[in-house]
Length: 415
Ligand SMILES: Cc1cc2nc3c(=O)[nH]c(=O)nc-3n(C[C@H](O)[C@H](O)[C@H](O)COP(=O)(O)OP(=O)(O)OC[C@H]3O[C@@H](n4cnc5c(N)ncnc54)[C@H](O)[C@@H]3O)c2cc1C
Image 1 (cartoon, helix red, strand yellow):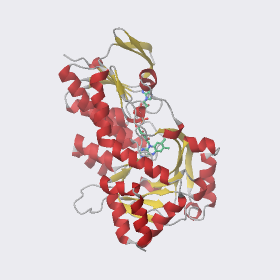
Image 2 (cartoon, protein in one colour):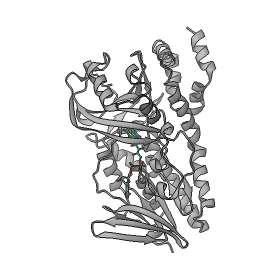
Image 3 (cartoon, helix red, strand yellow):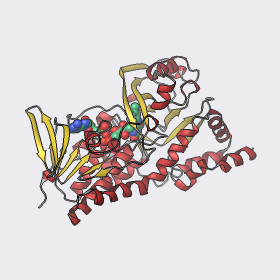
Image 4 (cartoon, protein in one colour):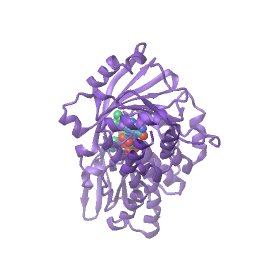
């Protein structure tokens, strides 16, 4: 008989909540440990991609109705605008055919609202929820793992759980104490986020906007509309490029808002709300070992963020879903060892590596602004090309075209 302390999830962000929700759906008791209480903020662009929508549908389609029914917190989004360094842009809908869609293919929601909503769906019949409790360290002993925890009443230990799921984000103690994953500047992004009101010229279908501004390359700037007339404004850059070019991201972002000819007019009546805050993005541009003896890593703890778009919530929830599926197999076979857990890594990378690899290629293309300008110029003039790029969002084989030099040669010839 499994005890709640046999399966321990550390962190109740998107990765931890998804793991917990899928375990509960399978009737598996577990403990979830979270250092904060909800609602709590997380520095993010706040865009919930199609993959988040997909995972929620697998959990319970009624969850999507709940988001759609709270327009004050969840803004439906239908596409993305890419703005090339030369200022030209293309609008790419997330879905080529929306006639059969009952919900928007994406949403934008402040994380303070989205994470609190996810957390409120946890099922206390199966999840023993310990809030205000931090994992400080993990020891490996001959009998198994020992977790050193702390809450307002002091320190305590949990001894020898069968499985620990690291879902505590970028600064994961589970990853640091038990895995070989370390921060690597070529596979890590620095990011900042600000909230503004009164930004003008937002898309009427709430397209998110990614701007590849000449002065910020290879970094990028975003404008994501939010409910209640607000917008999430931010910028990100690969850490290796930031240290090489000695970039001050906050200064560069404020300068772009004040002076960039394509941006400044839109901010002339805008107001910064609160502080500009920063946080890291551990990218999935490299395959890592994301499990071991008695542990699995999910979400940012496993470095799974899309290296081109910076989206990490989708992969956090997707890895949580796969972790819960793997845990069912562990229980069935009574195996929680490193060898058995390798099938979790395989399940994740078999499904997601092609997409992460392509995004890594696209991240590298941003180093060539002329190529970016060229593709966007062409797409600006050519409806068929715009539709092809739109379909690339749904079809990975089509997206693979972007890695093929022939794609660009054909563009050059077909003027
Ligand atoms: C500037 C920026 C912009 C971004 N924009 C987007 C975007 O628009 N869309 C998108 O999809 N992704 C975006 N991301 C990435 C996204 O924020 C992360 O990928 C996502 O939050 C990962 O979810 P997670 O559950 O793995 O970790 P987190 O969301 O970090 O959750 C971890 C949880 O664990 C808790 N915790 C931490 N340490 C401990 C501990 N020791 N003990 C107990 N609990 C602990 C935390 O309190 C938290 O609740 C962005 C990231 C940044 C930095």
